Image (cartoon, rainbow, N blue to C red; front, side, top):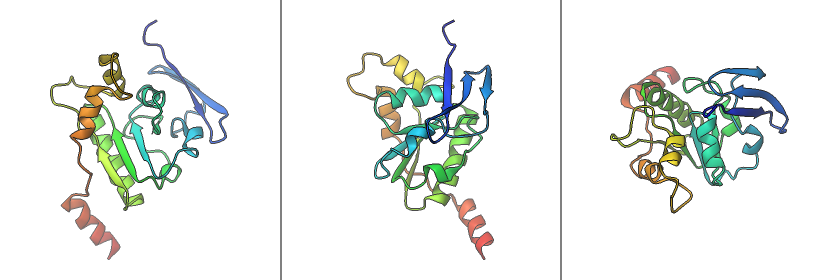
Length: 178
């Protein structure tokens, strides 16, 4: 049927270790890992890394030549950050819904702790877009796009400012390091 996607999850060497039937089930190693992890070592650290909420979103950007990954176990689960350490900028592009917003902030906070010199960008989707809007939707809405990136995603990126730990986070960090 229309929405039956199957995503292969690989180990770092490129061997398929899991098949994930989108929103149905998995067969193999269903542990939390980075999608496209066999490609991450070939990515340039002096360029930006896009982190999407799911595989379907990530593959859209990957097919257009972007450095991208996503977690394989949902937006509130963070795989091993050591595997994506050291990029100059991270774009966290999660869905426009409550869990996507919460998960994006959770990931941004952990990325900033691990990569204090990197620019962490939590993408802000336009208010006019439907709840749950994501990268895949942006590609579907803009099939006649005039560049590699759909217009709604370009607009979201341009409306995004670097993530910073808020005062509460800074206070907690000061207390725990004292």
